[in-house]
Length: 110
Image 1 (cartoon, rainbow, N blue to C red):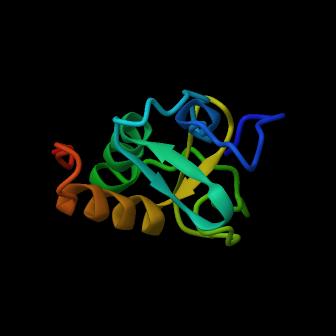
Image 2: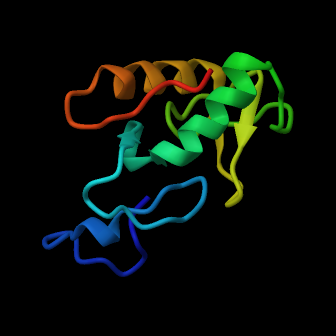
Image 3: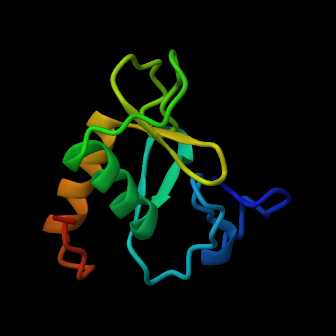
């Protein structure tokens, strides 16, 4: 998400916020962007991956909409501290993207 009131013509790294915890992006830490600017930071992604991909724990309300793909999902979802929800599919895809990235030293949780 973008910081409310941020200048769209002069976006700074700190204007990009994780939808799941609200943390500002520092311009260095891993982050994955979903559709229409939805963001998940590496720490939230690791928590979501542990919850969904490793233990199949569902913390989302039925009929939730995933912040990353913007689809209403029926599969298990992970709810972050800020209330945003990530679906299992997006969590696994985002983890695969970060694990392959040359820019970050991010490792899928085990």
